[in-house]
Length: 445
Image (tube, rainbow, N blue to C red; front, side):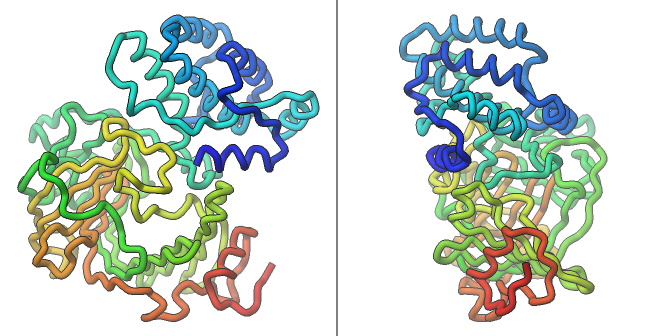
């Protein structure tokens, strides 16, 4: 993915010099220049939204003091590549997100180069060691964190911040329930097999839910029987609830509503396709090509309601069907589990909390965690849905309980499932991706 992003910089006309050809001192000089050229209006947007792209330091003096401290810790020759690579990541982020297009053009005309994004990820092999190593490692993690969101560049500032709340304080009424409501990679000790699964919710707090019944079958020392993935071609029904607005952070102001509908998955050839149907409300069809993903283009989504139809650029790139596997080919970072990467928490026996007889049953499931999302996969070899998703949950996001999976190409059931109706209003050129996936004969532009 780093190579893809670097290619995108070159295609945009930017002068790119390989990161390994830069010295730390050259990168610091570049960052000084970029710091002074930054667009105040953009920085204000990031500050208000608490966006990960916001400045970490208020002024150049503060950041130079910080540089001095980290550079002193990175004197060990073995740490210098990590220090350099972290600065390359951060310089590219500043160039792309802190400068106006006008300033970028002027700096290109002046001959200014930017570094490429490094292909190596240092975190998983450099943990432990001296306090100096830990300081350099901490700085590096902060500098590369933006890549976690780069299967498509999210344009809406309200949707860009993937930051999480710190672990909840101990629940006074029921100690331990706070770890049932919310448990992610930040929690110490790490999440157990029955933690982080939540339950039916009517508010944001630990006491504003009915915990799902859960019993530990085995811990992560016993290997999973399944993969942390969705089927590439399938149709499933879902019930549960969702928070409005979706968030990774606790604020006590969430509103919850029940959901019931169908999920269609169509990962085939070079197209990633996903459709939700909610009876009485409408449908949402999202398509993203691998070529679009390589350009950080989020693809397009058709919104169908009983009254109208429109197509616009998607809010984010399509959900990865292998998101909960450590080997997910679309994950650019592949972070270790204790930094938010995919983790297997163990096997559990749960009473599913869906809204139909098929989704209220007792099930044996493998429990996976990535970032703040908990994913249960049927691990009962005697079950008709063995190896298929049972439940997806995020503390202040969705709770989806799946049932009735049909593992087949959705077009076998509904030939036009991926088609965009001809009367749709086209709001973005990204919608052209539907030409590859649907049988629309007349294209509106």
